[in-house]
Length: 466
Image: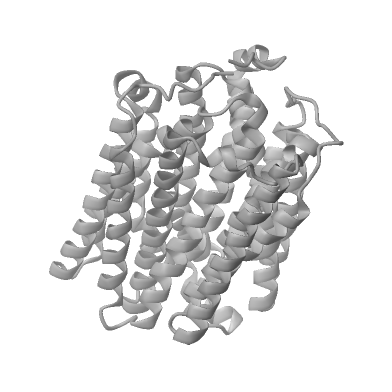
């Protein structure tokens, strides 16, 4: 068992001061991933692009995060957690400013998808590493992760609502202005934040592994996006992605055998409980972002609703997620993490079924609210315990690696959700695409539920604390 890092208890005493900027950082990154879902028509008209063009911008943002999250987590050991957090916020802010002024889709992709994606990959791993280091004990970590995941989930669920309000009142560019303001606030609040562990500039960095892992993920998701254009191109990209990822795992095994430090240690995948937790994280965000894009695009493009009306419907998901996630600490004391994750997936999957059935039976925008409410409640129940299961499975010395892997898996789920559901929806936008996308998302919910059922029944992971 490792000992708590110096300064950890002091920081925990002033927990709110430490937690607010970390939670806000997760909020704004999650907000960026979903708020564009209600701006599809406005961006398409203003920048002379299509629904598919906006889908590509959203997916590339999520994909850049996923592809660079593992290298970003590894760099925290070399550069320090606070420095990575501040640098990521600065890059993100520049990207948001560029997006607000974008004259065309290309500049929007550069600012939002690339720069904001790179910034997020740098700033998110420190959020989870610092939380794990500064808050010791299952209950304290559950409370801290609960606050962070609550704001992250609220950012994703409320993104359409806030985005709709800003788009209607000012314009779609105001959403990126809002992001700049929040990033500036976080930078101000993190000035006094102390890193509990010193950086190690001599720590080796596996550049080859970083390139291989990023390239493999990019090829896989690009292959999914190509599905409605060219089946052979899709197959080729998927095969290439699988081959590159196989090469990545071969490379890191080779480094380990030679005694050198790889980007990602293969031992991270030997913990059964952590592996199951990673599967549940991937499925959670795949469902959340897939539903957000599908419902947002369907309401605007097919039903013809405005940005504010579309965003208003997502209030149900926001309220559901807020209600369940705010009770994370109390629920963690009463129920096992497995129970919370299983119940969350069952509730969220039931919400998708309700979305499918009610919308087909009732021709009214409010028919979407019961299903979105259930999805919000379900996600709020399981976001925190899934993160705690994974992060708490490893000691302090490995938090850089596991945090990067955990966030990469989650953001890969987000990009896959938008890519898979979006591709199905766009391909058959007015002819059963909505139903097909929802059925696929429900299937992924069942996959997450299946993984959760294999988690241990005990209340903790049995992992070292501190």
